[in-house]
Length: 162
Image (tube, rainbow, N blue to C red; front, side, top):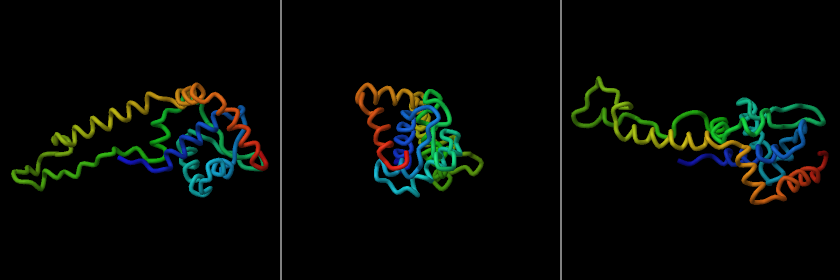
């Protein structure tokens, strides 16, 4: 399974917003400029996060995006689902219905052992991401790279108009 780059962009953006002072918003253009990303595409990811209630946006000269919930209440799975959607990674097409001895009355999405194994893997992956919050990730980064929060806020400030 391969996730879109939007997931990476969204996770980094949320992490960066977690270091902003309370009530401070950052424009999408600044978030994009921080990593040299296309602003229009990052804005689509931020809008998806806003629809999911992960970030909120305000308009106007001091507007932009900020976390809508505390980092402790945002899981990595929340961000992935906001960007990629809730669908399972594996989609059973009921291939067994086309094979020899197929029974048209059987729901092979449930009976197929391949589909079951893939569903178990998907659930394990989702459980792992649901068990890790943005706060956990933030703490890991701060432990490994203690200067990152201050550097992030200073870099945003250095971008005009922050």
